[in-house]
Image (tube, rainbow, N blue to C red):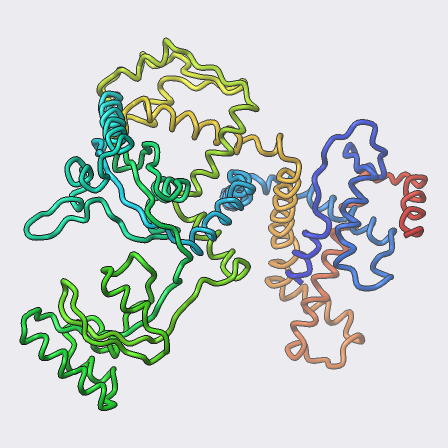
Amino acid sequence: MKKSVLLICLLFSFVLIAQKKEKVLVSIDNEKITVQEFKRVYEKNLDAIDNEEAKDIDNNLELFINYRLKVREAYAIKLDTLSSYKKEIETYRNQLSAPYLQDSAFINQLVRDAYFRTKNEVKAKHILIRTPKVPTPKDTLEAYQKIIKIRNRIVNGEDFEKVAEEVSEDPSARDFNGRKGNKGNLGYFSAFKMVFPFEDAAYNTKVGQVSKPFRTRFGYHILKVDEFRPSKGEVEVAHILVKDLSKKGEDKINEVYAKLNKDEQFGSLAERYSDDAGTKSRDGKLRKFGTGVMVKSFEDVAFSLEKEGEYSKPFKTRFGWHIVQLIKKHPVQPFDEIKIDLENRIKSSSRAQLSQNAVIERLKEKYSIQENPLAKEILNSKDLSKVDTDSLQQTMFTINELKITQKDFVDFAKNRKDKPNYELFNEFKDKTILTYYKDNLEKSEPQFASTLQEYKDGLLLFELMQQKIWNKSAQDSLGLKNYFDKNIDNYKTKNLKEIKGEVMNDYQNFLEKNWIADLRKNAIITVDKKQLKNIKKHYNRK
């Protein structure tokens, strides 16, 4: 019974949107229901109707009127004021609004870019000039000017690697404690391996060229692209590691290799001889990986193996001596097979903010937004938490008719130490614009308003049915017994316990029928027969 009521909620829920000069089909007291509203609901229901009798216009109109009467009753007894109802609506509204806060076209482009960058790898080197965690405008300008000068040196002919070794503030670029520096070389990488601004700059710089300066959370970078190639996908391997880099370690790995050549099992040898405690109990198996994850020498050997089960000769890395066995290669899947996974990764990463930024920029063009330069002077304060709140009454900016005060900004920023005030203001302004859009979605997005109202009405009706019908039938054992006694001839047995579920369902229908009759008795319902006739003609022609 409850499921059927929920279905009816979905079938007959709608939004009463005022429309000029629309023909009225039904009046319930002062409520006007237009022809278009009924047609919209009826046509929406057609997909769920599987027989001609259920398509009958008169029957659907009666059900439609019954639904409106129930919803009116729910509002009349103020079920919409229940805290549980408000909480449920707020949760649903947040879920429903989420897609509106993202630019779907922008997301789709990010997905296609991510697939291209998954199928193709780029090899690059970079130079980093760091900025403090909370940079001032002066810090930012100094770092930018420094990276510009460095780029000019390289563009004018100096060797990128030598300059990187000299000036890069990435510690890995230089030799340290016996470790050889990489001179800025990062090797090959693909989508999601670097922070997005870095990845984006690499894939938008041509081979052999030096990028323009760009910023990440670490500071300012320039990079040079060395190569571009199709991705090797991922590989799944097992390995045996002997950490001893001396001649003794080499002898041990050669002993293991000899046993492999005598057809001893790789997993068994890994368990007995490998010094990798994390994999030896799993037959030496590593998680699958792509390029840029392992040290280059290990990666090169792993990807060079062709046949599953094939194993390498012993080789050396800075971690020790290895033998690698190929378990399986995983080439990049077709776009249609990984599209959803890519989309989910984008939406759960910092890239989703880029899509939201696109929405915000569109809203900035749409809304009337005015800033107050005098009120913005508060951004020069060194410690916003110490500003007297009584003095924060000036309007910092407006969004259409909405005024945002200095206090609103300080409440947002006073405990934030991660960014300078001017950056916090821009962040606050963008968030406020997006919140304003979200709070007013019912006015700007008709489909959102319609869907939300449908859910509100359906949820109210569910609560109303719970109170009026379901709880009553479950708790009123005497009423159930009286109903059964009066209708006993309709049942195959005279034992109520044996068919209690069936009787309770009939009793609920009986209660609902009487309830609707009372609702109709207390309402003035008028149907425009001319408009109803026109509706029937319209659907009979189809």
